[in-house]
Image 1 (tube, rainbow, N blue to C red):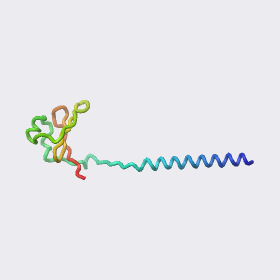
Image 2: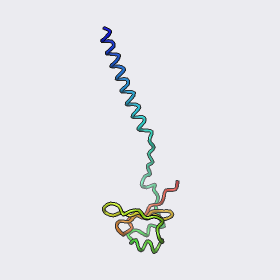
Image 3: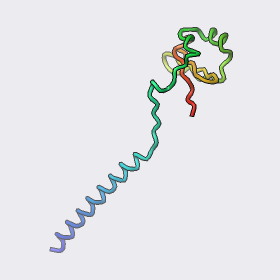
Image 4: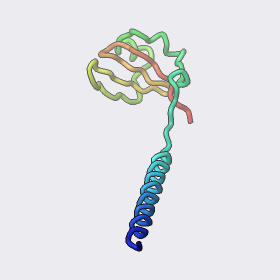
Length: 104
């Protein structure tokens, strides 16, 4: 009798430990902060919208030298130029998109 009762209580303890462990792992995974900025909230750069499709030389002529250049990366080659209030993204040597810098 004792051995059967002991096996049942051991099984319950193991089940309880498994449930608590799983709950702990699930709760610790939700402790990480995730910052998501919807595409529509990223900011539209009206002062640089006219740049779309222009070559890098034209952008340099209009805006001056960028503060920083990153890339090119990937295929097609994407390069990012940083200006005071926004970024200019190039595909090869043409402006693909402009994105306002996050202020926060």
